[in-house]
Image (cartoon, rainbow, N blue to C red):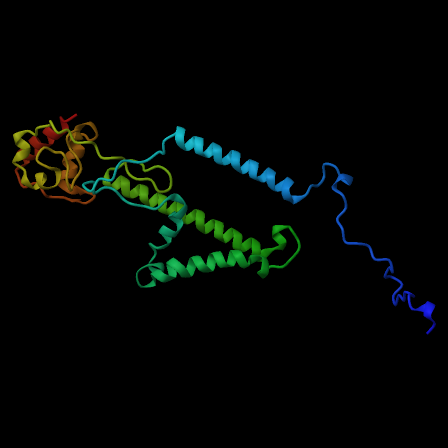
Length: 264
């Protein structure tokens, strides 16, 4: 081969350009207002927004106290502990026989693992490129089933909790996982009538001066219950309190009910 031919360029395919262009990004000045470099321009803006949100959150926590419920009271047997609202659906799931007891691992790990795993794998199980939900039956079905299950279980847990509070005579807990209304604070200067001291079965739970113990405080029971309600509670029981605990005569029971109803 002649010496002058050694620098010749051979192109096997006419579609390939013999001239190589360097792989360099174009100048961003050519596209004003439409794009910018990730570092440091875009990332700096993200950090500034995050800093403002964090500062606002810190100011809120300092200026507004947390809406805490009443302090823990070991003598309040009407308290029903429940998790926060965002865990209520799992809490309700563990109440069903097929997800509790001997099958608790199924309710704690198995079912939630399958549900969340299906949501994660949905893009791989349904690889269709159509964006209309009706054309994506697998992904759409998994999402709708998950949302329905979460909303239904959360509602069921809240509804059951409210019914338990009503059965115990408590107020609405509020929210998904609230607690019953706080028990009335006992008055240390309150002195019960001698009529109360004669009922040892009542004193054992409600205290010698009706300050409460295993049972609730009754020092102002007349302001929340009528005489008829008090009589019904003593005769039939309510919540953890069994009926038929009063051992006196009907006349003594009427005197006790009238006394309790007078406590305002």
